[in-house]
Image (tube, rainbow, N blue to C red; front, side, top):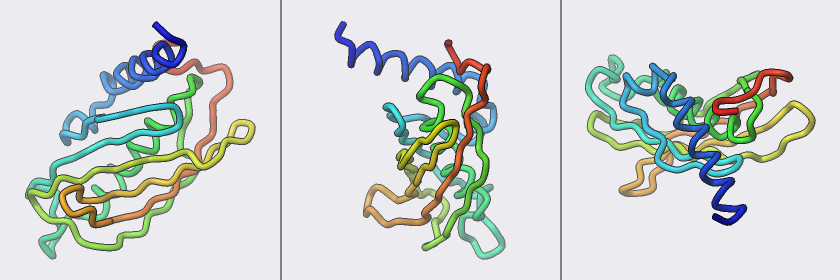
Length: 147
């Protein structure tokens, strides 16, 4: 196995160890569909229990999906990374039955801090539903999942 393949396998193993403990994502049907160093793609199928009083997806679910993608991307490096702050901009409504994909990308890491941008979209028409920025901090001395 090449070094790149070893790294990819380690990152996937870490993500699956985290997912095994991630009751929230499991209960909402959020799955990790792809992951690499500083990057993650998660997806969620919207159901009627996620709708607000206007018949569109509650912003909390959009934030949660983006936050989960951010968390998985930030935890690809090994030490435990947690959110320090985050913000979201809701651009378009999502509806029951929509498949939503959140792609998180590391913008920078300096010392213990990282910045990640997440785009939530409907993949069938590439409509951007929300944009999210998260700031992470590493917890020194706390090894990440699987090491």
